[in-house]
Amino acid sequence: MKSARARVWRRTALLAVLLLAACRATPDTSHVTTLTFWAMGREGESVRQLIPAFERAHPDIHVRVDILPWKGAHEKLLTAFAGDTTPDLCQLGNTWVAELAALGALRPLGQRVRQSRVIDASDYFPGIWDTNRIDGTLYGIPWYVDTRLLFYRSDLLARAGFDHPPASWAEWAQQMAAVKRLVGPDRYAIMLPLNEFEQLESLGLQQDQPMLRDDGRYGNFQSAGFEQALRFYDRIFQQHWAPKVTNAEVPNPWAEFGQGYFAFYLSGPWNIAEFRKRLPADVQKDWATAPLPGPDGPGASLAGGSSLVIFRHSRHAAAAWALIEYLSQPTVQLRFYQLVGDMPPRRATWKFPALADDPAAHAFRVQLERARPVPKVPEWERIASQLAVTGERMAHGELTPDQAARSLDRHADAILAKRRWVMDHGVPASHAQGAP
Image (cartoon, rainbow, N blue to C red):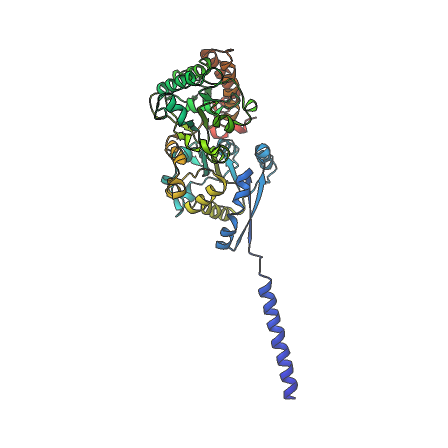
């Protein structure tokens, strides 16, 4: 009898051990939150490499990263909002923040920032932080920052008689004229592709007057400041300092830059890696970067890039905020920079040697202190596209700078008509996009 009882006890104990092992082998996932994160392009592909460390630190959160192509992202976001299928959080281009905020699609984040031990607003470059404030409310946290400045051939400048890059428009014009004399009729001082609006936009941001007036109701391109920008831009082409071409006509600007087809190139941070990869070894010592010159001294440039936002209808806002805080840590931002090459928006991240000791990156660090947001209206991207169209017509001699300014104001005023109607009928500016 005792032996039989012992056998039963042993079988029971063995069964208990097996059941315990089975429980350990199949962890309980019933309390795991699945967070949906929409990201675009290379950033989406690269951020996936950062997620495992976040999930280890937050075992109750699983992150699903859905990658959207940039080309269709804007339409998909609007469709998702209309169908109430938005993700929990999203990478959002800074010029889209105003539009999604106007639709009421985004959660305000000011209170979370005030309570955060990770995100310090004063550590961010002010221009990029300001892109996320719409009518005084914060809707996004900068993820990476983009701006424009000068890439230049230091050897060509030296041969033209200059040992430093330009610090003002007058000095810039002097250097472009000297380089043009040096290189002759078949080469140029600068490349400004006519299908890009960012160059003229940056010159406009350097002015004291805004490019839109009356709380974004009307264009302000006939202001003295923007007309000054138009005249300077027009002079570059009329003096033949720049070729009248689009990007499609110069498909390999790195090779042309390396061969001395132009000495200045107004571009963004991704080209640091491209120039290092694509230029011949014997040219690597002959190029550098410099902040944009302004009308009377160091100039501003645009505050572009992407931010992280939480959609209003997210059921997992706390988990989404935890991921935003993680991606905002300086060490994580540094890793993201090493993966993608996108510039971090926090000054603390720039203290790491990978950025602090990089001479080509230093000019961006300086420029980011003078980055400014573009006008924060949902219609700005449509207006900006007219900058490229009008600038190209002016470069080809079809418009004078005065005519170009009037044309831009006409186009802007037409694009902003619905915004004026909504605001003039007592609806707050932040809801203008929802007008009938």
